[in-house]
Image 1 (cartoon, rainbow, N blue to C red):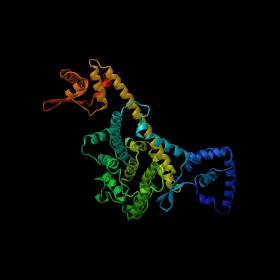
Image 2: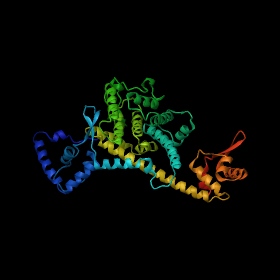
Image 3: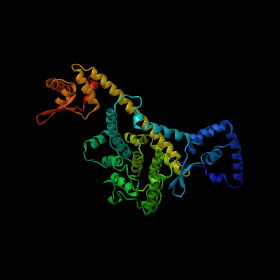
Length: 461
């Protein structure tokens, strides 16, 4: 991957060149006040937050100005109101900052509106129990997907089918890669279930890493502990093939940097939109690189932790790593643009918001698919031959409540029928494999078959 570079603004402001630059700025500013092609060009470039390598290849409107002078103008006058991030600084001690463009505000509003329980199911007549069942199934699937793809980003090589089978069956992992995936799954469950009410701390971050790295590092003493690369040859570097993309801060700074990051996360005095704050946490763990391995997984885990902790419950039902894996080059470049352009976090925020929007789209597609399937199942139930209206009602209940337990007594009481008729109804559904029959002492009870939906979908083919 090619490391991006940006024009040196200081060079434009030196000596006689600085005087000419200032005079150009005055003229550009006059043009920008009018509805000119230059005004529209700069506004669009700022709103899309073009990095220099893209900006320098854009076709300019009719103007005598160079890409370089327009870039410097945009940086100094259009991106100069960026918000500095409290407690968070780069290697040189300069605060990171970000701009809240109209595009970012629009996307944040969209996320707020769509990642709420009520609005995900807008315009549907699905009952609350059915919603909960779908989301329960979705969260398990998403946690597994996140565990697999977050590990694959870090190099784990195994098929999705094998990994899912391992996690669902509870079998012990056989390989290093399977161990990484299982650890990641356990860490995400820990984050979303047990740690979501805790404040961020050094110990919490180490605890997450200890679960992620359990049994994976050559030196067990490095599990859940910050790196201590005191020798040049031991220094952690971020590579892309044979290219060093980034050298993280000195190991002696890690404890203080993480402490400052926790202060930023826990500080409620100064408002940051929770999604923005979660994205900054994600970025900073990758930037500080506190561990010898597992930093990316820890960073993505903390992103989930912060949003679930702040009420964005539906983030449990999406996998950001699924999207990141498909755009891994953009993911790395978003880091590099921020690092190389003076700590401007806006690049990483733009990328990450795009990832979230894709996740929202995927979740809504899932819900719409389930609604269509649900309506189809209800239709297929009504089309079943040889079953009564009572049995149709029971099947409609069964597809909404997969954990339901049915008894002859309960069925006869619900429908005011005889014991013999109730028994016949249930045994007939067992014969069709919609229910399974069990016995406790002398009493029969019936459970919903795991294959009920498949059977109903197949029955009309």
